Image (cartoon, rainbow, N blue to C red; front, top):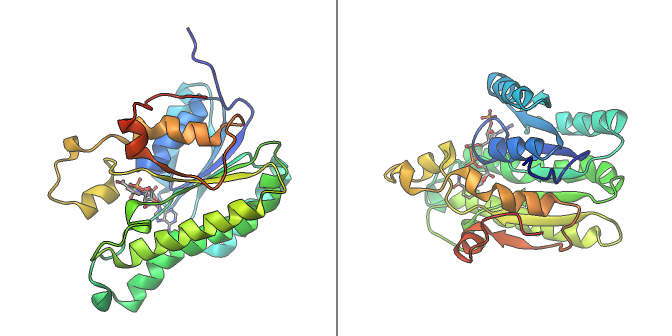
Length: 249
Ligand code: NDP
């Protein structure tokens, strides 16, 4: 039996979709009928994703770019307006770890790089996508945070601070969207087997960490027109521990 497609006709922009969590979410959304617009710097990896999607009889709009070239984000917004007239789903996922070091040892250059990637690019996305999200009958914005964004932990420096600020940014945007059909939520994936996780936890055996695919359903719920909450932080580990392992809506 063909599984029900939950995102038929929806247009989704997913940042950081060349690998890891973003790639997994982009594939899942496409399998559920969404047209996915995917960004990352690695053009080759986006093309491989597109090839895989074509095997399902769908395809993606590929936007190879650096999210810290902020004017490109405005350009993507204009193109979405011209081509689709709306954006149903925004997943602000792209992120970098930066140097994990005590605050006193972080370099100004690395601090700025992490803030640009993890915080400012997401604010620029809000700024550029606000009108197309509001043009959707059920706009859904999802921002990807981390445990260290709401739990101070020594040595997580600029990464943790950028995620804390991202959480406030998403919270404010959620409040500002209460006059509209746009819902804004956050997800903390918990440990997921990706390149970033391997960088952060080099001594950890990758097979001990859950695959990104195990949390696809949580993104799907937050992206769904049927989802009703806003300003939520979805803690993936807690959801999985409570047995929330499949689409619930
Ligand atoms: P990966 O490092 O595997 O993937 C990061 C993605 O972001 C890649 O597609 C990368 O593409 C893209 N990216 C990074 N910098 C830029 C840039 N300047 N411009 C465009 N794209 C960029 O990370 P994960 O999948 O692990 O992480 C995804 C999100 O989940 C991040 O926000 C991370 O903070 C968060 N997270 C992850 C956890 C984990 O355990 N994996 C735990 C908690 C949170 P490219 O290099 O091709 O540009």
